[in-house]
Image (tube, rainbow over all chains, first blue to last red):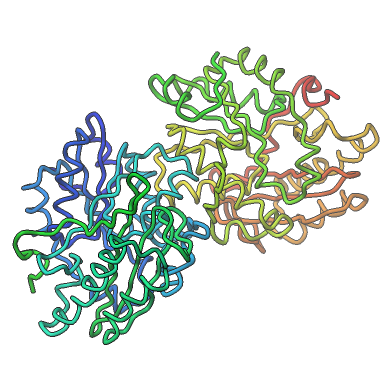
Amino acid sequence: MEVTDTFAVTRALYQGRIGLLPTMGYFHEGHLSLMDLLRSHCDTLVVSNFVNPTQFDKEADLAAYPRDVERDGELAAEHGVDIHFVPEVEEVYPPGSSTEVTVGAVALGMEGKYRPSHFVGVATVVAKLFAGLRPDIAVFGKKDAQQIAVLKGMVTDLRFPVEIVAAPLVREPDGLALSSRNVRLSREDREAALAISRGLFQAAMQIDAGERDAQRLEATVSRSISRLGADYVELVTADTMEPMSTLNGPAVLAVAAHVGDVRLIDNLSIEWDDAKPKPDRGLILDEPSRLGTLH
Amino acid sequence: MEVTDTFAVTRALYQGRIGLLPTMGYFHEGHLSLMDLLRSHCDTLVVSNFVNPTQFDKEADLAAYPRDVERDGELAAEHGVDIHFVPEVEEVYPPGSSTEVTVGAVALGMEGKYRPSHFVGVATVVAKLFAGLRPDIAVFGKKDAQQIAVLKGMVTDLRFPVEIVAAPLVREPDGLALSSRNVRLSREDREAALAISRGLFQAAMQIDAGERDAQRLEATVSRSISRLGADYVELVTADTMEPMSTLNGPAVLAVAAHVGDVRLIDNLSIEWDDAKPKPDRGLILDEPSRLGTLH
């Protein structure tokens, strides 16, 4: 495995079909499952590892974001990564950098509402990665459901010839969605956070039982997380992220909540098969994550 | 020469180093000189021909923009173009398209002030062309001096591995800068328009004679075009397009003026050589343009 810190040197190492997994590092089993998935779809597997400052609304959140590039490199090598691209901020944002990529309505609700500059930062940094690394295929995890919708729109609009693959959300055996932020949860907060996935799973059972009313599905999740500080619980269409009143097509039931001083997001993506909704609870680990709970 | 209308089919025809000349068509000798220049720097020469709706502030200007794709194709073939890329609006702006690329301060003055959405349209469409066509090198004419500064910033910021070449402005023997809009000038207006280049050439002589004061240089041009409707006459730095009070480095003396109902821009780019300013009057044709005056 090569470790690079410039776009040009990274491109110079390419052979064949290029797969890119953009990450902010501090890998957990969710990242590793994305590497494994992408490995079988490309010749050169590139993992970018860059904590993107422009997508953080709060300095404190950026400062608190966990980092361990060395450990990341070992994990990447074990999972068949060819190039671990770890640029400095100046390589991604050259001095005087001011160009921004803004997407439309898909970025306005939910995360866009609570973190106003978040998706400009995300769309801009991914545009840079796609422009500078020219991948053929890129993978993103479904945990960031709105991010996938935003990036699919960006790629289509800007005509990047990059195939976007949405990979399953990965959960702890008890349901907690894997997140690099989980390491910041105290034992008590981690227990309290389970209310999020429990609420989503209850909503999934209601959907399986025939419930189609958005308000009732949202209320189920809201009740479950009533002791946490919820930012939103919303049923939205899968592609445009517009609020739905009735579940009648591909959708996402999304939630953001504060647990202690950590903000967590989670969701249930609801696919359709044979004209019937199929709630996707994600990939549930057999054993507790080793990586996602390291302190 | 191949004629294509999709990004994918265009890319499928590539061999070796890719050169791109983005145009809005209705070729004149200025465009042809860019093709000739680029021809020697690439293996596959692509000319895009797309009247970009988002960079026009006024519907009427968009509607009046001259078009003749067939004639363009013949000229392109004569000048060694390999691929004439002529997309429909839907190929460049897919239905629901909403992503925009905005650049910073470099786009605020001059054209940015008088045509507020112009450079968002330019940066967005060129980002699409660079993302979708993945050229190695692209050429732009110095007539649009601020556009070059905007696009150099966009390319650096978004990390496109595209070399940007700025090619000389081309003028009629009497000094008028070639422009696709010149065909819309009446005989009288065309005569009146010469005041623009005359003013710039007078300023060039002053610079050669030692003048360094921005106000005096701008006044020379303003006096010359006093009978036209001037939008601005400004001496700005070549890279950031910031107003200069004293000519003390690479600069552009830029002007925009209305002649009849046609808006024309022109400029003197001022390079530095041996710590001395070298006003660049551009490339002056020996014989009057055939193409630039066709009605």
